[in-house]
Picture (cartoon, rainbow, N blue to C red):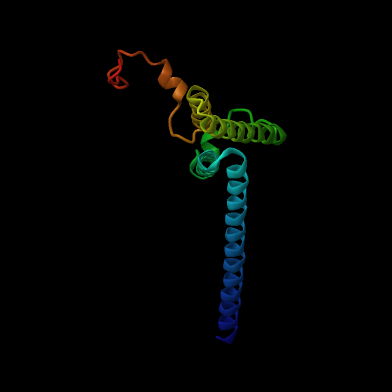
Length: 156
């Protein structure tokens, strides 16, 4: 019985230590975000900084959600598996594309260039749809005819 109590005590101490480390990490991340906001605010103004930081955080959140809730590996395995190196390169390129499009959208929002901002946001949505993060394929939806009653909207 003493051994079980000691194991439980050690697990509790470890859990507290991990929680403290996680809390320190979150506080540090908060300060880094605040510093980035302040630097952007000095250079581009408060509204542009807030929009940029907000869009970047949203993109990161969407990316994490896409990875977490995306299709399982068994559902997306092609008939012939690509090499691990190829998958990493594809994943790295997708992440880089999302980050660049997010930064562009934030910058264009700050400049007030609505068409360029909308183009960047559309590219972000297309990238997320391509990796299955949105649960639907935007390209397939665009290919459907306007006469299709299931996809008919008020503007058709």
